[in-house]
Length: 243
Ligand SMILES: [Zn+2]
Image (cartoon, rainbow, N blue to C red):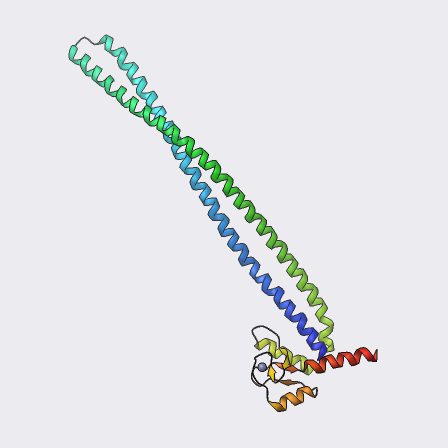
């Protein structure tokens, strides 16, 4: 029974490692989702900045074209003989000049907007990079934790092997059957007074007596194997004093 309890202790620790091993990939998946979201945010901010820069460039090019047109019209004015045509061209030039001045104002506003947007983008970029770095570090940490859990589990599995041969086969198969049925937790539990510490239900007096007498009995409520803690420590003391 004592060997079985040692085996159970190892099994429970192995189980805890496995639970952790299963949780870590989920945790990493969450980190990756957060990272993707941050990358997306960074792209959005960059696009907004680019859009302003593009508008600025387009406006400047448009002004240049209009100015070239004005120069062309200015030259044409000299060649025109008819007053009507002359007036029409003057009107055309005037119109272009007005459009140019509107666009120049827009460019001045854009420059202010761009300065703001650039400063904001740099701040955002710094913040997002810091957040990404932090997530990167967390990923590395959970990777290390996973490697540790695997290593710990493998070491425990190695430790477990000799115990398997030492437990009485009938008892071992009972233990295995209970463990296969139970979702988690121990399959062998101590009696707590008259109560099974696995399911917290009262145990029948006859079973208590048999367990106290050193027999292996199962709780009739939950099916877990019962042992008497006092008897176990008594046995330990006897074993120690006999050495
Ligand atoms: Zn029980």
